[in-house]
Image (cartoon, rainbow, N blue to C red; front, side):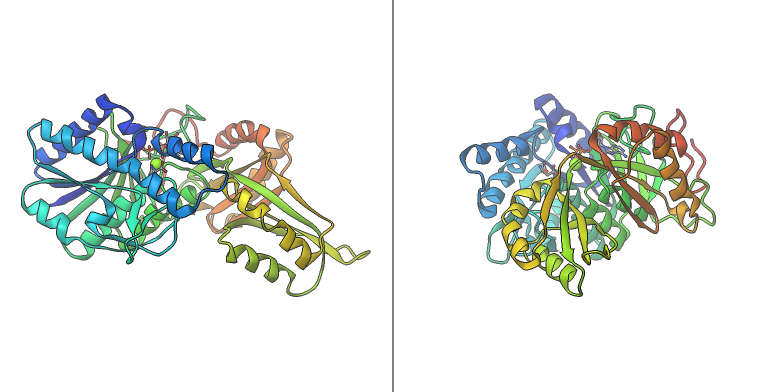
Length: 424
Ligand code: ADP
Ligand code: ASP
Ligand code: MG
């Protein structure tokens, strides 16, 4: 029998009725003749609530204890879902990441998966059981509990599917069930007229996820791409709808230059002002940030002003990393002697993504022109082969999103035409 991996997010498991609904979706897949491995997140806002509890006690709780705490959310979901499935008369077993053998590197809060053992999962499947695995969590070789980063259950699911596929154990696909009917050109909760995509390439989805479309964890798409796991994003509440397929697309021509747009309000901009323009300064700054595991996204270095031969370096970091950055401020000042370190929290990053923008310089111009027509100032710009990001003031985020959706035809009623695929 083929194995299907199904993943259900917190929004699909928010209360008892929703857990029963998920149980029906799992049983339905089993009834179609497939073996099923289910990966679940914590119920509703459980993870947020756990984090809040810790912060009510301490401003800076240790990451080991945070992982210990946060991993409990998924443990509740696996047990309740197993009980709901057993209640329907089917065999089910719940397993934590440690019980499965989801081995990660030795870092807390953003650990990467190193290996997954499949023997225990397969033994349960051979016994006819539906296997329910706690997402988001793993274990180090020394037995420490780790978590994979917010939204990481998607990655748990795809990694399990990839490992089963690598071992030729008959993986069919990985279905990520959520509270939306598929992947849209942009967040349908922000732009209700956003179009649902029938399919999207791994590359474009990866870029969209990286620039803030939190519908899929970026590392899940990275893993699906690396192991060529067919992956769908579909709705827990509309089981007949196949949602959006994420695949390796190799079409000869691409109709639309822009496939999707994402708006990320979770970054802050840091500007290190007036640092001497000499070799080695950027290296010192970013080595220090790397040493403390601060991921940097956009970076701009200004042109050195001839009068005092200094320049500014501006970059963006995750808002959650700001407290850690603040502890480094004095060290940066003593190394680089800047006139000021300016923090700007009032920013949003708007990105457009599309494989069709390769070698079309007019797309960047059109994006800047659209923002200019709305009198929206661009604070920073960064580009890759298939992405252009602009940093704007947070209060302009919605206006910019709507204007760009119009300019690049990302809204409207029909399923979008991407990669030459005709709508149903
Ligand atoms: P889950 O609990 O299932 O993991 P998430 O909240 O992580 O759900 O992801 C689903 C949400 O992602 C949707 O409710 C939607 O608001 C948001 N989203 C952002 N960008 C997109 C997009 N391009 N297409 C669909 N949903 C998106
Ligand atoms: N429960 C975790 C979170 O809220 C993991 C996940 O939902 O994927 O981030
Ligand atoms: Mg999610």
